[in-house]
Image (cartoon, rainbow, N blue to C red):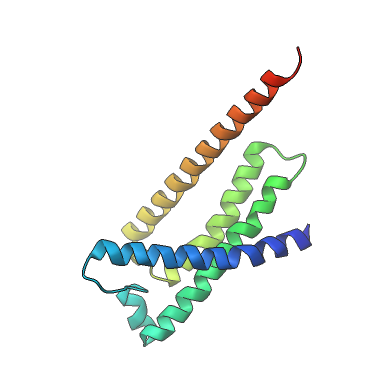
Length: 149
């Protein structure tokens, strides 16, 4: 199991970096002034220079991807209920995600900013979970219909 977690983390790190880069491109496009915004301005201030901020965000994006990919081994746990797998996965990803988002300044450092971030995180998490659950349920139904009666 430990080997599988490490393997998934090593796969997830570059995926996290790629997703982080794509997000910054979309943010830059949405601003619409022709400039590339690699990081939020407050992170540049916190880190003392743009390159330091980009390096930090790069590392944090890789850790983010590794954490999510490594946590996916929860879904392979035999004997666990779907509820237990979901809650453990949610706990792992939340514990990994929140500090990264906080230190990368992906959320305002206010109570309202934190609550908004948590709300968005949970909405996205459960939206994806429901879509995956529905797709899997449909697939199982189709497989069961093909079985001889």
